Length: 310
Length: 323
Image (cartoon, rainbow over all chains, first blue to last red; front, side, top):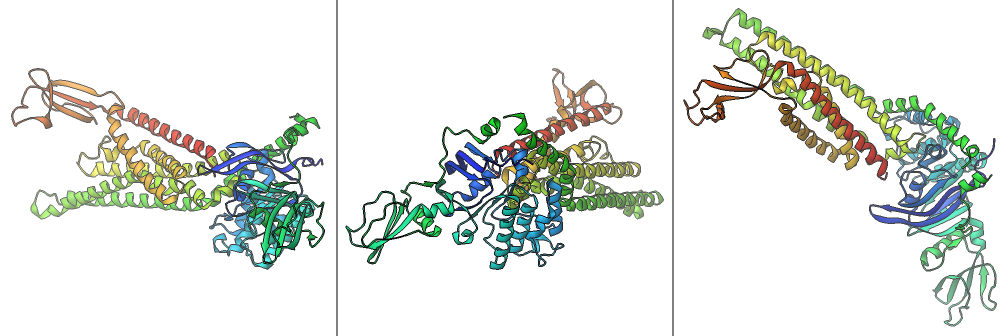
């Protein structure tokens, strides 16, 4: 079978404007998340994570611009069958049992895979229990089971780990990771706690004030920056291009600098920042230009054009 | 876009819609199973009430036949008969309220509850389009409401026939509002309109409780409107002549009075003083018996047209509005 996802982004947003209650939430969002990757969608509350995921899931209509999932309109029949979405509040019908909820998934999705859904559950979640009687974490597992059983190509998960205990979190992440590995599923999952996603995400997308602040492979992001530490003396800070943030604490100054190139000598020590340090620096420095590993070229053909050319 | 590249997705979309048509129905049935239960209970209660009213009427009649209330000792049989009549009228009033209750308790929560709980997001990200999801969500309650309303209409006719056999009251005429509104096809269409209005209000308000309240008010307003417009649905017949009431059959008397010397019409209830309305020529304005079913038909068509408009608006709102 030909992999139709090849060469097509899992999610591509182009000039995406989305308003909510009259207020702009996404402002001209342009980004591309490659297919087959696990993308950590991070950013402060109100930064646009949920709105972005709901727009990508076809639940919100863009006011301007487009969003495409594997080249498809997420609101179309073709797009809808290829995506699975779990909302932040993990909505389920409280009066249905777990078994009935999964049967609903089977009834509503032609490609339903009960084996995939079953991976999310464990013996502590009774099939006959009503969803309304489950704990928050168990409900999340059922919601994720419903999404996974759909056997979609793109999983859009809004804060999937937020109300899970550490053990469940481990289980859920490993199920998601193995799905990504086995079926090549593209996963976009949001969190405002980066630590939740660090280590499992190979792609990072930082949204703040409805704009992209960072987008690209997580390892490239850290490799493309340097954390410089040196004396706090006023004139000591080196005049470098691409300084994202300068912080002085006590007698020590820390600089986050873009680029892996020149390192000033003398007292300055250089190291690769952790992903969390990097994201925090970008969030604290709204003036710093966004870091985008693969800038979208205005003249680049869109996914559908590429398909047509192929 | 080339046909070749499009083909797989079109195929999968097609198989999706085929695969999930019965699945969608199963899901909606599972979701709305309490509706079946409640509808069944309501029908059962209505039939039981109707049977009780009929039994009371026949019993009071036979008592009254055995002991005619012309003698003071038998006054009690008359009061039994009147009690049985009053019970039938309560039954009719209850059936008149049914559309309001359907609108508020079935229609308003139907989608509003999904919007309030966010479960529509769950449904709209399954492999089913918004329009088909909404169609399935609406079709099932519409079928249940139709069945219930037909059952209630038949029960009302059943009770009315007993009332006509046992009492001499003229409140059981087909044109009497409590009869007209619960008889024939109009109550079925009223119930469907209430359902459609409730759903639309729910989609607009997006919260269950306020939607229920607004639906009650809206449905009451619509009933008042149809009550007001009813006499104008068909041309009013007029009779002018000498003597008193001469109309034959079941007519709906709208207005009667005298024709004064100057040719103007004065309804009886506007006579300035006793004696001034005594003149040879009277007029009567009415709907005749043969207009009953055409009028029910026209009113039903109007009610269903409004229901269709409300449903179309529901689709439009849900298609356009954010989720």
